[in-house]
Image (spheres, each protein chain N blue to C red):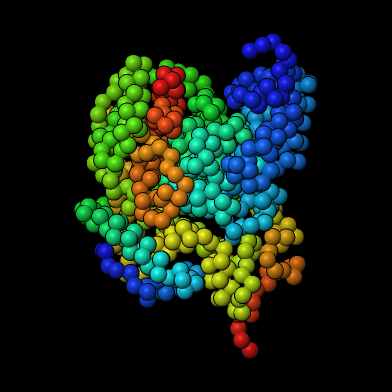
Amino acid sequence: MAEKVTVKDVERVAELAHLELAPEEIEPMLRDLNAILDYVAELSQIDTTGVEPLAQVSELESEAIAETRADRQETSLARSTVMQQAPETDGAFFKVPKVIER
Amino acid sequence: MPTETKTASHYVEKPQTLAALREGIAAGRVKAVDLAHAYYARIDAKNPALNVYLSATRERALAQAARIDELAAKGDPLPALAGAPMGIKDVLVMQGAPSTAGSKMLKGYEPPYDCTAVTRLEAAGAVLLGKVNCDEFAMGSSNENSAYGPVRNPVDTERVPGGSSGGSAAAVAANLAVATLGTDTGGSIRQPASFCGVVGVLPTWGRVSRYGLIAFASSLDRIGPFAGNVRDAATVLGAIAGHDTKDATSSAAPVEDYAAESDKPAAGLRIGVPEEYFSEGLDAEVRAAIEKGIAALEAAGCAVKKISLPHTKYAVPTYYLAATAEASANLARFDGVRYGYRSARAGTLAEMYSRSRDEGFGAEVKRRIFLGTYALSAGYYDAYYRKAQQVRRILAEEFLRAFAEVDAIVTPTSPFPAFRIREKTGDPLSMYLADIYTVTASLAGICGVTTPCGTTQAGLPVGMQVLARHMGESTAFRVARAVESAEI
């Protein structure tokens, strides 16, 4: 479980997370990840054979989560309201840098 | 008190209870508008040293205060939080008010809608003064991870207020609000409340709608109140709790009258003291204060017994795997497209995502995204994420077994009192270990209240954490009231 994270791993995670680190951030990230993963490795001491994973706790609560709401059409936020927060927009759409090179 | 006319400043000089404020407004002794102005004057004077408020929602607050004054002038009955000046943690959105989550990523972001908890507070008459500082995206245990600078602890400004809801705790401690809302994912309400000497509530997961909470780890995130006393905290929880069609994870369990329940004596309640929370690493002065609190509960007629929660030491690693995995997914939405920060040095779409996120997020947030992404990635999922979910069930079931024998469990909220600014910033792991007594209840989804329980010789507050079963808030409040009234 306590494998050492390498620079290659950090670069792979950066790609998965769409989060490019500056060159000077890589070394501290490597050090911190290794320290944290060394620490969490103590979980391997626990025998969890046959234990169902618990992703969230609603199943443990006696009062169940409420029934789902009726599926009906409702008005949502106005486009003009939402677009006010966009970094770049033409008023109708979000604008982003070119995806496909011609 | 001398008999002079009570002005707004009188009400501000000394922290008032919610009931006293409401009564004062109803009787015409103080106007909600004057009270709001007096609080803003106090904030203007004290905020530069404490860095609690990030923004003021003055127009909205004064309009609400005027509505309350109109109700009072007509002699109409006032709602529970009438005129109560409150602060809102900056991870909770308010329409048209900057909501930054303590991050550069959301600098200048003005949400187009209100958080349900905010809507409910206003419906209950609260006057929302502004948004308060916190660790970036609620990730931290000291409030030093805010992009807008650390909050200082009003008890000792060289020390941290705790985190991540450090601003919410400090606002109440410095009387820059009568009550506040914070959020708790691994201890972010309870730990700062204990560091600042105020009451903080972790409601049962699902008790309060999270609609409008900028998500960190959805299976753990909760919204809860801070107040100067247990009854006020119970009153605020009563105002925000309950099912919400906008949050499918909110529970339909009936909302009890928590304030009235908190008035009931604790005599006869069975209290468990888990030995694992009193072992190595617990500060001697914190231990002594908590032991006094336990003695006070015995004196109040509670049946105190030692219990064991043997997997406690595995809670921090379990929490940091579960929480960071969820964070890595939740924070994927910050991509520079629809709102928030966009990097200026991006040629392609992929660069735009990647550089916006590198420039917009702070170091701790990036650390957690990396850890979570790593733990979920191919080849590591079973060893880390799945393993943590399995241990999470073991920890939760351990609590359920304990609650078959006791009504509440009491522990120190934190192993040590407020530490110094920059004391732990160099070592993320030592910061994570500050959450050792709080992450357990987070993982199990149970509720809790932290209440002041004495101080160290240096005058630093100590908090006692009272935990109760799912939807057991009323019991937790009763026990906390008994500790509070013992005046340890």
